[in-house]
Length: 505
Ligand SMILES: *[C@@H]1O[C@H](CO)[C@@H](O)[C@H](O)[C@H]1NC(C)=O
Image (cartoon, rainbow, N blue to C red):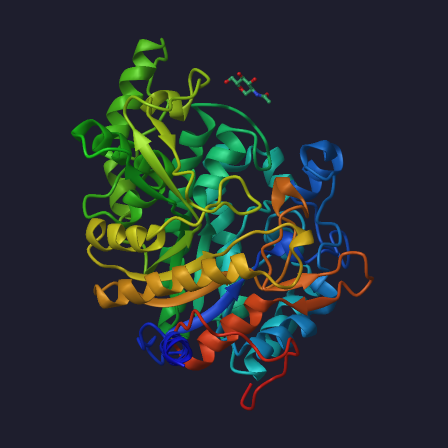
């Protein structure tokens, strides 16, 4: 009797959410996707070839399952179902990217592909019908192949090409799109694509490509921002930001050496792309500039492999933001002396010469690089708050991968989302100006070099069915409950796995 009473008491207590903290009513909950990962229709209705089409067709074995985005989730034809899923979840916003070569087949604005423009108009209008705010990324890695053949991000003219494309997008869609992001994840563009070989165009120009790209990319961002600020914001009234991928980097020990090593790792992985825009002084991070200059001289290069921004460029790039977009997934522990891997010479990681590791106790996802580390997102948000004078922040991606075999009952993903959403509430409590959160991803999609082997979707996608049938996972119900209740309840489980559209959506 006594025991039963005690058990009942425990059950009653655990049914009460740990905390009743709420997200503000105007906080934007959404999900995110990217054009190449979902659209398919790679050569339909006048779309031009982009660098992912080109790489997966000419070099198919670089993709783990030798797949590509030719059809993907076929959102080009299934966009109404996509919006129906957004309504099922009750989303406030939806982040997606425009395919540059679908709108401009050659990359240049001399020829506009009307069918591509129509597709985005339809997608946007369908969202707006249901009060879902579009958040549009201009560049999520799918450069028109013709521009790659002209050097892509190695060519300083890329900033003009990007500005032309951005202006056209503002002109075409800016009457309805009020949330713009210029670039998604500059490190993945520059380091992985040019300095290494883990994203298109797999240049592997180690220690050189990533640095040249960084300079051209931040200038391209600034040109697109100034264009919006000067010529479109007065009539359209939206905001324009820039999205960077930030893992949490913490020192392995409290030593001054490990703390400095951690700062260097932050400088190579994100601050090289964000200090020029968000820091008070502007320009690339000073330590990195000095290290690369010294190493380059030692190695016999006539000038630093990291081309500096001129004073004029620094001033032009500095302050070109309305918000900071944070993509966040995982965490690393950094050491000045331990866990060093052999690095190519020259290369960015040879330049900084630090080691890193993880805590094996952190649960790992289907992606080797993605673990559930305590407070990883909170650390990142607090770091940005202090480094950049408390900017407005949107979490523009955050999510967890599983294999397809994991099925619909994705408890690991639910655990991850609940933990990271609690950290968002912690950040709000700490005064971080966090305005929204976009879960990655609305549905399973083409996970770049991993093909379809790693699944990030709130909705599972059946790639064997012609309709690419989408089915909600447990995490979809959990996220819907967060959006509806504006709070996190670790204990919440749906009564059925049947999704409906609530009134008002
Ligand atoms: C990439 O370049 C480095 C030299 O910087 C070389 O050691 C490595 O083998 C290259 N990798 C590939 C796959 O080409």
